[in-house]
Length: 533
Image (cartoon, rainbow, N blue to C red; front, side):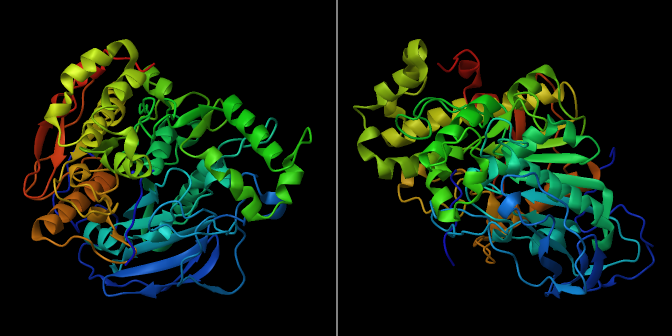
């Protein structure tokens, strides 16, 4: 199996996995669910496995090709006859920039994969969970995330999706409808498709949860601030994707300016105009020229549209960070958290590419460039002598300042408006999905929580009893939340709802699920007073 790297997700709780609150007959025995169902995309014939039923490669929108390149997603008409939904569609166009990611030139890529328990009861109305994958807005696919264990254990309908990526998903141009947010529009359209067709798969169209990690989590957080969220979803789970994230200068790579996951549409449009000129499309309105270019040519500017959505648009009127601070968020329950050593995987990659940038000699300069007048204070709190290496020290600073404390701040802000539960993935020895070589940069890094919910690329990576049990507990928390709005799991503490003053979250680790003071873990009393230049 290829290693996966994703460097740049009711008043009474249900405490037993597999139990569901729905309209099925409690006396009825479960039976194998039908493999042929009728949906708005046509009749679909799926496949059964030992523990699940799957419908793969289902079109949720028309192919965004030709004149539909850089148009908002259009509904997919029902196909004639029965569609064999037994094989996932190709990933959206992407370059193999990460280990484990596949190169793809496919624009015809707007597919969903639906996984349900193998057996259902008549009248079942299971919670519907729509997964928005991560990958820096430039890589990934729904099919990478095998959802059989999640659907079976959690008694839920799980939908994984593709959405347009990079330049095809986030190009901006003045006057272009949907500018900067085509991938975000795809995510919303796929979720609407899942809601519309939920009953066909045994799901409840009035109980839909969006959950996402990294870029998918940042998109899920943005959804909470979008007018399109109203009535679309009933709950949201944000993993490693708070709207409040802000990476300092040099945080993602030496010399890269400070940035957030969100950009003004004006800036995106300017980047799009410059990219069009680079590709030889210098007309006042370059869109028709761009639509005629082959995919490999367009991909030359792909990285210009990484790591952000665009605000100042119909889908995102306001910067999502500001919207959270202003209380402009959907009033639906939210489960939100991140990973204790989040930035380790980023710095592990950066240190291989630029090893001379992360040394004892350069460490003070990194901090000074990032934090200006506050550098001395930061260095006092993060002395190099406290860490096994300069890359580990810098990774800890960025984890705390850019991920841990902004996630806490975002949860507090949302808690003033809606019910919020906070967690932190803290397993100290998880599967090394990022292929990190430096032992000082392992730990609960970005993306290492994913194997606990999904079997990545079709294989389990949970090799110890403790990991397997934590995976079960996390699935119970996630699906309980999707079912009832309260995250609960057998033999594990119930997560406590946040307040605007909360400092503690539920820490998830093998054999040790407990309440933890995340403000202390990430030194948030320092970072709340250190503005990023």
